[in-house]
Length: 462
Image 1: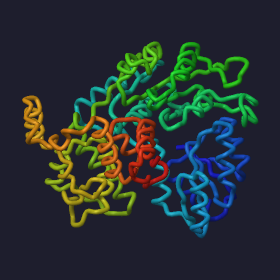
Image 2: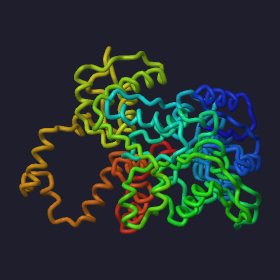
Image 3: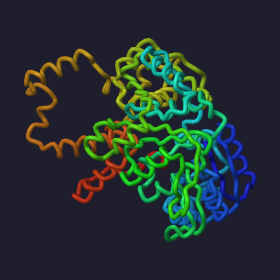
Image 4: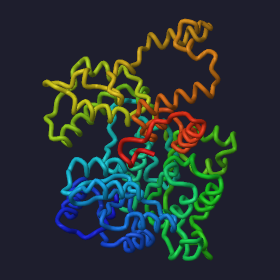
């Protein structure tokens, strides 16, 4: 996690920096917004900026946008003036952190944008086979495509491969292709020269050059625009990149890892992904099984998260009650490890007594886990009934008479309400990209449909 702190290091901001460093963040500091943009432009990469709200946050974000530099901002300030905090959010800050700083809030904000400190916890044989293959190919220079549902831990696996590689002492740079708008992604990856476009006031070093000598992770690569796919293919083949507006290529020495929660072979058939690029990326494929496919990992991860969040919240560690362990095993975990982690964080806070009992395991909307649990017998009966055409006794009866579009709309709206408006979490559960979800919501809003407002951490909400 790379944090760029912008502002004068007074006592409170300095305390926040120390707390960030204690979580493992690599912290850099500048005093002015001009220096901040210059640092990002020059290749001093950052995953997040923490900016004093006395500074011109709107100006900083506008300057970065003009130069196609993508880096989320959280504002911070002493006294927590509500008006100024609101102004900072309106200016484009994703979150506000009041000073004096709260260690848990600092840790939560940093954790929201970082997987740096997430160990690879597993006991299930199916996952152990994947790790065995990862260990075998990690020392090579081969490109690796890591696939699996949202929330299974693809970026955690990518970091594991980097740490096991011969490039472990070099940079590991991650780019989320789904989170960065198309008009910014090209500069984010390849950089640009002064005058390449309106607002390009100086040369900007991109992620390829930042990662030189190390590993570049292209997260959710299926969301990349077709035009950029062609440029990426050339960069991988020739080991050189062209900055936007550049006159000559720049040599780079990097290893490419990529992740996708979609079937890229199907995307090739649909014409949304280049077949030649897929061949270049998919030298080795690591498919991470869904959490429901690795039952031994459910309890291993639950125990890990229970200890982690007990320590983070200053709460004594408590074991999982037998009924809790059974309930965890029964749930289908559509959000995979990410959903399990959130559930265990809530459970640590809600549990009473000497054990984490079943009542503490709740869904995001506060309902007991049993409400979303998996009953294998019931699922088998439902599948059999559907196969035989006996839909009359099933919950699908209420869907008869509706169009597919109407059912899809209701599912999306219900899932969004279930996630309290959090777009990223809803997209993960639905198995679609955040961009697709946003387009659907825009379409619904324009049609007069009430869409749940975005809530939760600004880093995750869209």
